[in-house]
Length: 122
Length: 511
Image (cartoon, rainbow over all chains, first blue to last red; front, top):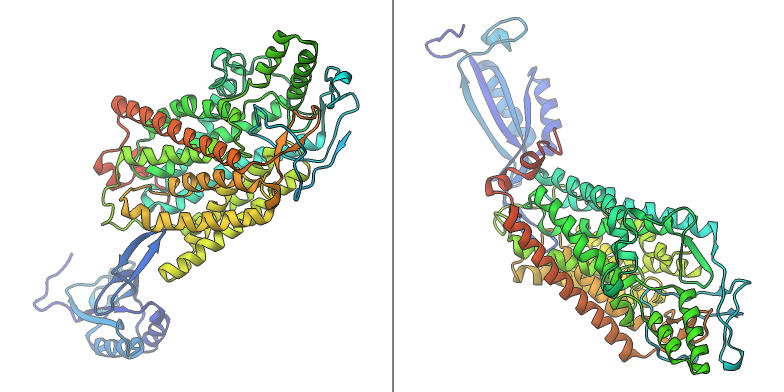
């Protein structure tokens, strides 16, 4: 049963888009500060970084999307700021296309195996 | 009597320009069989030509391997080459189309195809064969067919199998022109009609002849009859000498099928892509190849298999086979390099797709020339074809806004035309070529005929023009017929979803 609390639980969802080659470095830095799990997806996106043109036998395609890695990390409020800083610091290359980080509130979290909720689920 | 033929610098042997220049021909060092006696120029000593039909195990072994190599060219070679170039959602449809065509045409060939291509056609014999060998009637393990050397024969079964692979690959080439938008059922019906009305007649017109021993025999009979004043017999022999396919009688040279296979399929593809129209989203949507890895594998298998296609077209295992093998290496390499550098220069980067496209271009261009041109001439041919096809595919095709999805005309059609015309030039012994074959001036032997550029080039041009018109008009009629009866193209939402799921109920990849 999902119990609705007045202001949600003390858990944050951090979504980050980073350059793919930075994934290993970021993962290692995050596990060092105590993050015990994350979800990673391969995505395409664009921001300030522009795409490029590919040519296949005379057919030219403007490729407007650039491959990125999307990380989703769910941590308790206490750890959230540290996670954001760590990602930003580790993923930075000082070049266009380094990525973005967003922080969202989570209303509910459950551990599938045990049924623990919120902070205990992390 | 041994005839030694040098591959270069051969002066004309004074052989007459004669009717019935063979399309299929080669030069070779030949030994006449022991039983053959040949009539030379001394009219008083003319005796009828007799010969033994000798079958060599080496030849049969080589032809058997060549047959299998050509099958490999189609599956998986062509299937992967084309498959990698389409989008993921259509990969399976390309694989299925190519594979199904092989299976279907295989059965048609042994039913009536071989007969229409390679049997006597009665009053229509210039254009197409008859049905006397339907279901391979009369063919068994003892029947033989001639090669290009007097006295050397092949089991007919060997020949049937080898030619079958050619009949299978030609329609399979066409599918590239309208990939990603043709209905599978309509394609199958079209292919059956196309091989019946276009391919088998073309094969007959280009490749139907009596063989060196038959020509020698008839030529000798003609000379004897003329010497004896027997005009009726002389005319009969002359008629037999001319009883070949239409394009053969033009004097055109086509070693392995530049006209029958490549120009034929190329033009049929061109007409097909125009009749079916452009793909939905052409010019706007992303249609990049989904796997150039597969395309490269396909191209490599095509190259390896093509040695069976070109060198196997010699029907024997001898030095001309090796000439064809060598030409199939160097012309191909030259065209690949030419395309790669042309693209590097004009588009900025050397692409893998360009390199393998150049390679296939070279293979096509050298197909009619494989046993006629010298290696250096083949390199020149490859360089020219590589650059020409690159320019067509990279610029002309877009300017014409024609959606020949996988460049069937741009590569097979155009390189086939260049190769066919080039063969007329490169066969010249002065350019290192093997020279025009002559089976009748010294019957029982293979001589090198005098090379005349005007005649040779005109013959090639006539063959090319005929093929373009026959294939173009014939294919157009067949496309329209199928379109009216069952519709050629899939519906737009099917095209958007992808043919794999909609037409075949499967995905190429379930990852």
